[in-house]
Length: 294
Ligand code: SF4
Image (tube, rainbow, N blue to C red):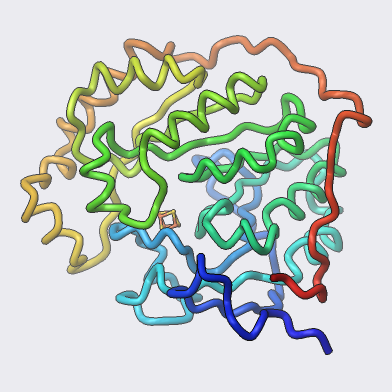
């Protein structure tokens, strides 16, 4: 039988423990209406970005110790097939991709599970999709994202305007300028972009930050507070750098107001964008479930 993973992992992932698995479920129902979506869909368990504040590292389904967060990822090899088998649940639903991993973490370059899940969702015409990421890798699926027309939006997490802060709190996630570039490319392609200042980190200049978000072509922005675990070691990171202010509600409110000045509170009217004709959608064949990936 063809091995699921080559004997030598590609150099790009040589420090990452990759543990492919067959998932038992793929759609996690979200009952709390505050979240604004019906199902969360995570094609991976674990996350190669390994943000130091990430609370998912202590989720009950984590495979390793919280200290090892970012060092392992379990691609759910059957995610697209599982999603296809459950598509009847998706009529009129909104799917958030992803709540417990980044769908465009580096491993997506190899496995294309997020892409293949999106290909399934594209065939569910009444389903809305929110893709949320920290990575410009999302651009590799630009044509596919455009094919959704108005029923898909992309959220980019940009928790700070200062890449030196990012290097400390998200050392393995893409640099902030590359996220702005991704936002611009997506918006220029007619895709609705939302900037998530989440979780809020130390900000250098809130007003300039908000103007930068607006200039990227994003139509919405929101500010989300940091959620820490009990005795979270990230407290020490904040304290050592003089950033405990990010936990202060007044600090968050100041940033929120700066963004509200440039982004209208109400969702701006959106000009409907017809999807491109099918002939224009290029969908190169992606590795199948039992194909060798190298
Ligand atoms: S990208 Fe998201 S899921 Fe991944 S480590 Fe960072 S916060 Fe956690």
